[in-house]
Image 1 (cartoon, rainbow, N blue to C red):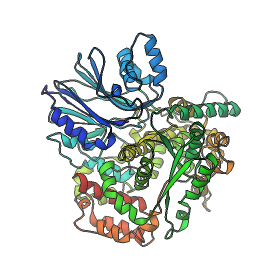
Image 2 (tube, rainbow, N blue to C red; image 1 turned 90 degrees about the horizontal axis):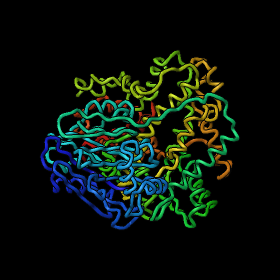
Image 3 (spheres, rainbow, N blue to C red; image 1 turned 180 degrees about the vertical axis):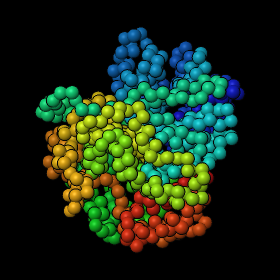
Image 4 (tube, rainbow, N blue to C red; image 1 turned 120 degrees about the vertical axis):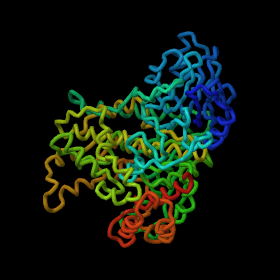
Length: 623
């Protein structure tokens, strides 16, 4: 796990080692254990190292092949590198290190771009071909590791984090108005845009080849999610056994490390099952939980603190357990550093994740998390059930896109973005939503087809946003986060499972009339225990049944209460201030009305308030 950055002057100018070092210095937090730089004419590759596997200098980067033709700068872990190394050795390749970086580089030499389909892991890398004078950057199939790129004054830039571009003379941070409209609608980015004008995130499962000249940049896809119903019946008992085997295998694969490994541990089944299997392999497993002070919480927020459940799990699996309790003021303390590291805000409230990573980094360099289990196994039934009954694909898009407008509905966006609406008006959030499916089949004849479309959508958007947040906030503390659910074999299996093995109330929901009096449909939409059926059954083999059957609960602070209580002065000071930087882009009167809705109890707008606070801090840090 590391940080990468680089330059290719497409007009032929030589890359500056001074500039390259300035770029990698800015992301030194990603790799505090070492640095390296390489320049060859117009190309420059930089690297910051976080030593996880092969701690010796033999694994230093940038790494070149013995003949010097290919040079690699890489961030991530290839979990099947032992198997690949054996296969490459049988083909006559020699290795001088014991890590995965040299295996990745050699695999590229042997198989070219087809090597991407052989890699089981998380990665973002750049390879410079000194003979063809070509730069290739690539990102893992699920998007666990990010890589951004931009063109500035004839130079192609790439880096693990956007802030590295600030080390390049000529780069100027400006707000991307289209990106802002996208974020204010979805609290996420469904395209490759960011909040920085001219800066893009290479999409998951894609690669990009860059040479000198003016040829347009054209990322290419080498892999994509494909959830589909099986052609024939699936035996549940056999499916359970296969899932159990693949889950064990995934956790075991991601335990490979030459440094200490720990695990996040909530009261839920995903992190609990990962911890159960990991603790069986490690005699002194460390686990980490972040809880919340609930003195001023109310309603559903009273259940947000999962420390007692996590402590019980720690007792069962005999882990060395650490926990932290967050209070309202902790958000205010964290936000300046959090916004700096996060760069572009994305889904959910990020600051509990920031503190969780900070806690874990005090004791380990690698931490396992349960991210991905919900998106693969249908952990959000109240979302999918809203999009089961449709006339056709267009009807599905109309209904479901409205549900995913998490911050500002599209009809309010012109008013919200009044100061810049002349520029933002060309953005169609409806088309942004529709285009998520541009490479996906639209033949939808059964409710199960709509479920699988919804799972595809979440894997491409919501999961992608979670992974970007997880990476930035873990690496802010020099911590490598690993996600066992995102193992190639486990994901392939999950995508082939029938929807009925994931969701139990599908048959009943199909019969519902959403407009029926009495709110019967809405009660189904609010169910939180229905999803992940087969995963719950399998995990019952490793954790207590009451944990495997527990209601779905997100990792969230009681901010709905805090924003009306302890944090109200902070909200007013930052957002009710006429001099706030966000008012160059959003309408002050509209913002005040929406915030008042929350403060006066008319509507819960905690996600919007958090997002506006984050945007204000983003503007202060970068613009």
